[in-house]
Amino acid sequence: MAKKLEGKVALVTGGAGGIGTAICKRLVDAGCRVVTNYRNEEKAAKWRETMKGQGYEIPMFKADVGDYKECEAMVAQIEKEIGPIDILVNNAGVTRDSSFRKMTHEQWDTVITSNLDSIFNVTHPVIEGMTNRGWGRVINISSVNGQKGQFGQANYSAAKAGMHGFTMAVAQEVARKGVTVNTLSPGYIGTEMVKAVPTEILNKIVAQIPVGRLGTPEEVAYCVEFLASDEAGFITGAELSMNGGQHMY
Image (cartoon, rainbow, N blue to C red; front, side, top):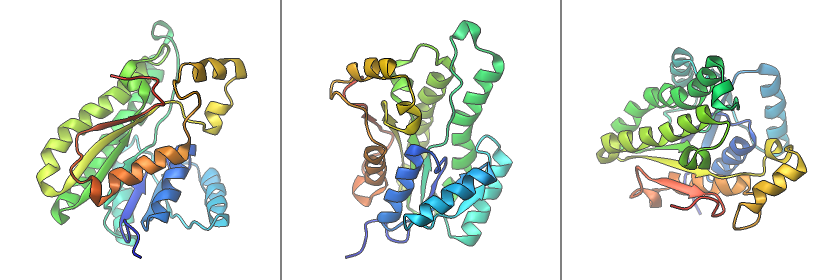
C-alpha cells in the first residue's frame, strides 16, 4: 500500500529541535523525502547521527532562516540535489523573554527576525514552484501565545500572531493554484526545553490545561501530516489550535 505522501519533498525548518524532530520522522514515515536546515555544524552532525541510528536519513542544508539570501541559496541547493519542494513546514524559531519595559531592541529584533521574517525568507523562494506545479503545502508552526499573548513575550507573541496574518493573506493568493497555507498553533508541548522548567512552575502550567497534561511532539507531527495530506486540500487560511483546551475562542 502506497504511503499518503509518497515521493513528496518536505522542507522542515528547525528540524533538529524537539518538535521539528518529531515532524521530520512523521513525514519520513508518510513517504516524504525530508530535509531540514542547520546553523551549527557540530550540533547538526550529532543530530544526523542520532537520526541515522533510529533509521532516518535526513539531509541537512546550512542556512540561517533569518537571512533571505541564505534561504534562497538553500532552496536552490535542495531543489537541485533532492527535487522541487512540495511541503514547507516553517517550524524554526527562538525566544528571548523579558517584560516589555525591560526588553532590549536586540531581543525584539532577534525574535521577529527568526520567527516572522523567516516565514517570508523561506516561503518566498518555494511558493512560485508550488503554484506552477499545481500542488503545495505551507504549514506555519505558531503558538497558543500568538493567540492569547503571554507576559514577558511581547516579541514572541507578536511574531507568532503575525505568522497567522501571513497565512491568511498568502492562502488567498495561491488557493486556486492547488496550494494551501495553514497555521498550526500548539500549546505547551513536552519537549526537553519545557520539561527543564522548574517543577513548581511546570505544575502551575499543567494546572491551566483542561486535559491535565502537556502535549507531545508526536501530536504536533500528526497535525502537520494531516494538513499536508490530499484529504486536507479544502482547508486553507486556517489556524488549527492544539493546546489541550488551554485557550478556546
